[in-house]
Structure formats: structure tokens, C-alpha cells
Length: 182
Image (cartoon, rainbow, N blue to C red; front, side, top):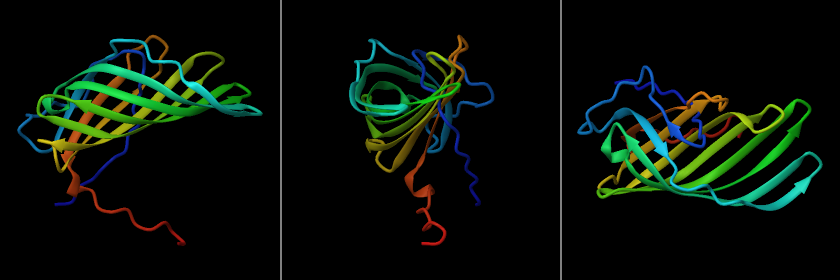
């Protein structure tokens, strides 16, 4: 069976309570599942520490989002999520760009998901107007051998972000080939 995959960016906004149009929920008994996700922070993130700067940029570390309640269409992906982020902000003539990476942990009664996230923002002369992120987590405990991904996208101008998730077997993804020319 040939498996097609697509990579989508995810949006991480203040409150990620949304409904995903066009992504049908699947039964949690299936090893492969796609589902809607709602994320509700319980507290404001901590303030990060500035760790570097230069002409047009500033880097920061240690922003903590703790106890984010995740309610997913598949119970394996629901629970409490914590993340620690570091990143950089770049000034551009018409706004700015932000990038960040995060360490992520999601815990529920059946197991634990641990992994990383990548976040990008676009700032049009003020707070971020567009934010996209992808979190990829590996399962532990009852979820050993599975991958959980959260994807999100949105414009952060008052419209809700679209958030969805996927769970699939880790062995479904082949090793990456060497880069061209290496």
C-alpha cells in the first residue's frame, strides 16, 4: 500500500479552541487516526529571558506554557500538555518574523507523549498576526511505537485557529534520505 503524506504547519495561539473543517474523527481503536483538537491554557506563559541580540534580532529562552488542557477527538491525544520554548524575533521593514522551538510533554492516564515543536510567527507592525506550528511527539507507556502530531494554523486577528491531530505507527515513516550532493 502506498502511503501519501503531507506536511502542514500548525498555529499556536492564546486559546486554541476550534473545530477543524474537513478532518473527520476516527475511532480511537484505529492505530491511524485524524481528529479535531481543542487546547485551553490554564495560566499565562512565563516571560522568557533575553539571551542574545544584534542588529534587527533578539533571541530568548525559557518561555514555559504549563497545564494546557488538551481535548482531542481521540482520547489517546487528550490530557495535560506542558512546553518550554526558545526562539528569536527578527525585525523586517514591514513587520517582523518570529521562530521558536519547543520541548513538549503530554500526559494522560494511559501514557505519555514526548517530543518537539516548531513555531513561526509573522508580525505586521505589532503582535503576531499569523502563527503556525507543528508538534511531533513519540509515545511512551501504552503509546509506545506511536507518533502523535498536532498541526495548527490561523491568522490571530480574532479568528479562531484551526487545530487537528494525527496518530500513526512510528514504523510507517521511513528514514530520511541523505541530502542531495552529500
